[in-house]
Length: 373
Ligand SMILES: Nc1ncnc2c1ncn2[C@@H]1O[C@H](COP(=O)(O)OP(=O)(O)OP(=O)(O)O)[C@@H](O)[C@H]1O
Image (cartoon, rainbow, N blue to C red; front, side, top):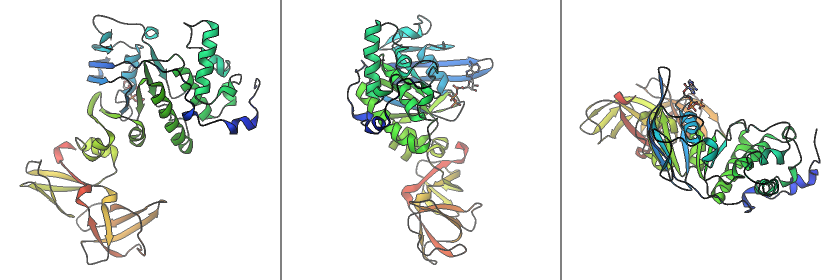
């Protein structure tokens, strides 16, 4: 049942919501975690997490399912108390041995992947829900301003089920920014959207977050998403922070094999390090930082180039798959268990079964100690 639906043409006339500029700004807060440990039964879900998110910064918590990302958000929000450690906002303890500030008094906005919209409330009522501290008139103004900010002011009187997934995501965003939180915590906020919509909405959401200025933590298990939106990526594994930094730095210089694998589907080949060099069946590469011993040579698929047979490393094309902008070519190489995968832009004339040469760009080669695996 739709109450006062927006005329269809208005839906098409809506301006891009990342460009509207009417949202109230937040006063961003610094959020710090000090040595957070969380134990459930005999499971140590968080194992000494320390992290400071600076005012206005957008941090992505990245990691596989079950590594503790959501638990850290819940502790920040005050929905959960840590087993030990402290959470501080602007250097004041909000969770810890000396204090516990109730979630509703932290000035933290939350947005979860299911959006959690109330089906029986209109869009406007949904957005007003978190504005209980304001008078009815003030709440109405703040909610309409937030809806306008996400380009949905014409949908105020509709009900959630009449909106598309992308529109519902924008309502959830409006609801979380309406109280102008100093900190916004978002748990997989784009995971319910199809890929085409996800890219656009993600970019627009980030534009709005930048304008509101809120300190933001976004949880995701998608490295591309993290690279696309984060000022800083914090990579987690089994309750610990493995590495943090700008996306380019982590991508180019992963701290270990786990971090490397997270960002790239490498060709991995066993090798042996001797005197700062690693030898393996596809060549010899520099490994100045490693001690002598077994190693894993990781080669990015885009670091392989096809040459005529007789040049560089000999190989035989096993398969070719058209992926749009690139082709994925699998090439068998003597001494290597699995065919190498190469992402090639223009493999003109290359056929399955054909002998080729393979050139490997050393900048796309990373080497880790085998003990790291
Ligand atoms: N209240 C709880 N009681 C017991 N175990 C819990 C509780 N909350 C979380 N866990 C467990 O803690 C671990 C980490 O869960 P968490 O939701 O933080 O992971 P996550 O990294 O966010 O994963 P996902 O990406 O799948 O949401 C999981 O094994 C989960 O089952």
